[in-house]
Image (tube, rainbow, N blue to C red):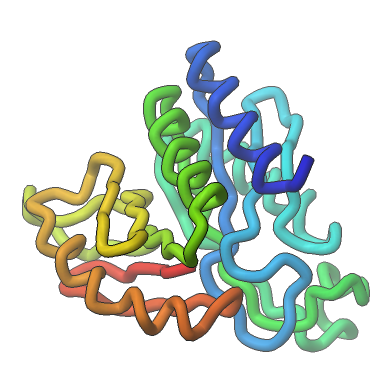
Amino acid sequence: MTTHRQVVSALLDAGSHDENLVLATVVRITGSSYGGVGARMICHGDGSRVGLVSGGCLESDLAEHAGLVYKTGEARVISYDTRDDDDVPWGLGLGCNGLIEVLLEPLSPQQATDLAGLIDRALVADTPSVIATVIRSSGTETGSARVGAHALFHGGEIRSTADWGSGAELTDANQHVNDALTAGRRGVVRDIGPTEVAFE
């Protein structure tokens, strides 16, 4: 089973067992990275993990941060600069030779189920598709998208999870789909109104 399939299976399992969890997703890379944008790891409340976001050099540290996100329920982006192995303990020469940003987002059982559906649909699509994720938001108005809002763009169709607020950012995100398709596994990050959106 591929890592993406393992993550989808774990998300569905959490949804069916009414379990909260934390999802780690690589959202931006400068330089090289083992997993690429869109690599994911699930962190359960008991400390167990499913999936990988690197060649093994970031997972343990991310799991510690995930524990805090699990307790507070607040998403956060963690940055690692592994371009200088002499200065950074995570560098370990395991393919993590760059600047990597990882979104840690708490997921309720329903959110886990909804996201599993989007990822699964992208995996079975017969043509390239794009997943967009809000990774930062400075919006204070009710209509602003929430960090962790997800959307799938495929064949002119848009499927989204909740938390896109009024939907203004979701509509604008559609304009960046071609950029994401061109970037491939490198992904792109765009500022859209008060939000920062990662595309994979």
